[in-house]
Image 1 (cartoon, rainbow, N blue to C red):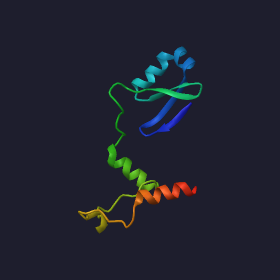
Image 2 (image 1 turned 180 degrees about the vertical axis):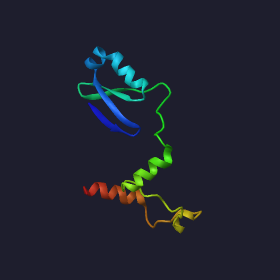
Image 3 (image 1 turned 30 degrees about the horizontal axis):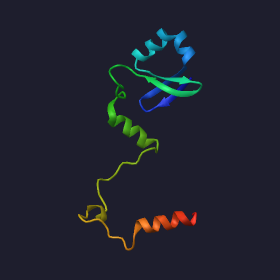
Image 4 (image 1 turned 45 degrees about the vertical axis):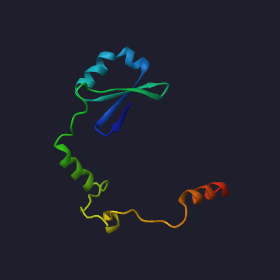
Amino acid sequence: MEFLAYSGVMKCAKIGELRDGLSRYLDQVREGTEVLVLDRDRPVARIVPAGGPRPAPGGDADRLLDLERRGLLRRGKGRFPAVLKRAQPVKVRGSVLADLRKERESGW
């Protein structure tokens, strides 16, 4: 079983499969694949290469460009709204805590 993970494809193996084919799974880990260990279909561990996750081919710039082209990412323009640049936080009338308690008591 395989899943698409942040750093690439992640293999999944149940404990019995891992025990029976440990050498095969370790070879895949040496090549950079992560293995998610499942106990009764619940994740319990992850086997990753000792050097940590490998960077995506082409680096972060290519990966970001690909995500942007696919519509999964929208890069910021570097401008912040004026309200975020204020030194003082915005003052709110009333008690936020009291309003929260009232809302929870009303069952909303």
